Length: 74
Image (cartoon, rainbow, N blue to C red):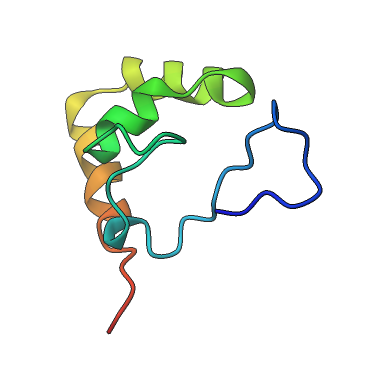
């Protein structure tokens, strides 16, 4: 994703539409699953990542299942 007009040390998170169609993930494209990318988040998303990690397995699985529906139709 282009980060025009944004300082190099600031990472802009891409929108979620099409998420399931765009692996690998992460700012360096070094994460292969949605679970990995959520767990790797820090900064402003640190609290969200912590809540995800502490959620019940059933809830994490439901969230991942939902995110996998966000595909780009071709």
